Length: 538
Image (tube, rainbow, N blue to C red; front, side, top):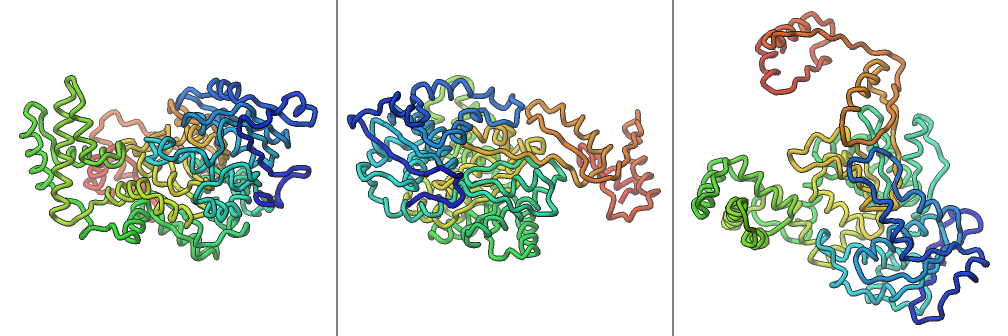
């Protein structure tokens, strides 16, 4: 039977019956007598709205929808009545809090709705923030993994959904296999089921080890190496993960930075344009001057600020120059001249790139996203290529990178994100704590696993860092224990005279018995580090 899995709990059948009105109505009382949990869609929507958390101010690791999701584990048969599929919010609720959690729990599911999945209009279901009918495609895909009655009209591309259904049927797969060298929290993360899994991994908690062992577990479950994608922000981290996978005897895994991933997409689809690189400061100043001249009274941007303004359009607002100009033209008020000048700068910059037959590094992500959004065949091709997607250092990613990952992980949503909101230090380039804390708002069925032991530092250092990090206002309230026996040592030498600090630090380094390469000096600014080096500290 399509959609069944050998991992389902006893007495469970993963079957979906989707009735469309005015079919014979389902009698709630009769369903309850037959052992069904009966939910009304409107009431479910009210409960879901009441559970909406207070944004990034919340501190609990618990998924706010946890109680609703637990009902599917407690009841093998669930009926949801009076379902409406009129709005995007309806589809999000239906997918995130009905179909997806019921599938993971292996429930027999009855849905009585105003229309069938195949009747949904992709154009009407397009979501501006995703640039495509993201939720609708994921809903159709998951429905296809069940045994669906013939009365539901099949979409034109049903054959492709059926091809993917076999893999999605393992969505509830878990394992009791424990990795001996991992602690209980690490093992729990490695052995998590499919769907979206978020691992909260403080510094020194063994996140790379967990990532490697998760890949090993996915291979054990039958996923081919070439169908697994590991992605992270920078190339150095990719090299480290690839080396760890090879050392662990797990070859053939695709490990790419976000820019490398975008480059692969554009290259394979024939969308690369000439050279790749950025322009020099002199060019940025000339472009900024031209934009300012065309918009008197808007001020002028320095080279760095001009580059940041263009990156904002590409990697946060995700607009083309034409869209940016239209948006700025519609603005009023004191900020309007500056907005028009920035949009004009963006247009001039893109014209310069086109004349030079060049793409910049932001285009690797921006252009690949637009291609996936606008070309359904290309989107389906790349989504089908990667069955499992893993992301390291999730707290470092910016909006465009999160969008790229969300597009590629759909429609099967086998996504494994590792990150720590306390280590979010790239706000200057649009990384945000909220992206970690509120991931369960994008994926309501998310399972969250915190790692709680620091294997890098002793008890005193771990406890001191825990007390310090508690001052962060936006964070999960999570435990942090020392994973090594050494206590560690913290010594404070107050220096009331700031100019004496570099000399004092250099003297401490000179007196240290350690090899120079084993000592690290941290400072609030690079200027202080230069002063330490000038004072003889290396």
